[in-house]
Image (cartoon, rainbow, N blue to C red; front, top):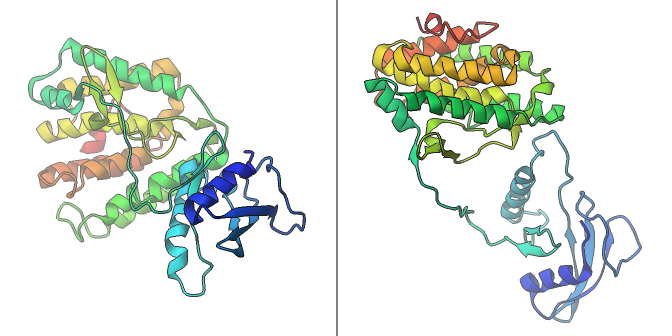
Length: 361
């Protein structure tokens, strides 16, 4: 990004006062003072700014984080998070250098302050429709219609299409596998919210599950070729159907790229979940929809390797739907059946989607 002198001076005046005059700026460690635009700024090279304000000569440093893959800095939002946090805490620690402001660059190279922010918000367009979980409630109680099969085809086609866009970035794939196990929003984080010694689990059972999940992390870690475009939270509350098979999706989460199994399990786990609530097994129309989803997706993508990597992603989705916090009204028997599924799937090298009930038993 090119950093223009006029934009920099306008920004400094907006936060420090209109009487400010920018004298010059230079890269840290260099003696040459720049008075013109800086080409290619924004890759972690800080600039020392010198200016006059209220009759006194002052200075400050402006810097960004270097764009890199790995270490949790892959996304723009990762780097924003670090800088926002630094601005909020630098001034609270004795003897720490003070932060003056935090902001962002626009596409046109303007500098915008966000230093006074307390919480961030998102403004979105409105869409019509009805969440897909209503369909699953209906199928659980009354069985399937032709529309249900059409919608499964539409959803599995959609995932096959978005997953076809691949990305070559091994550190990012390793991060996504690590996060599904250890992130605060994923397996370890969800399990931290479970009560101590829940009645539907044996002593030390959660610890044993976590050990199995860590083993899966090391099994999946070399499969970096699988990184692709994903939704990231493709469950029935984030899918809005209108007439027929016309739908939109909401709340894309946890990054632009990831493991396709994350999306597949996010949606298909719910066919199992709703059926277990009714019959303690995967049966009837929900079984048909579950198998059709896999059949169509595998036919469209040819991704048979998917069945060798889904286990920890099913584990994540299972600990969510079995959670006493998120689903407080489930019976002990339902939670136990869900954990049977989770543990048996983790112990299998390859998931047999036509034999799900063997995992639940």
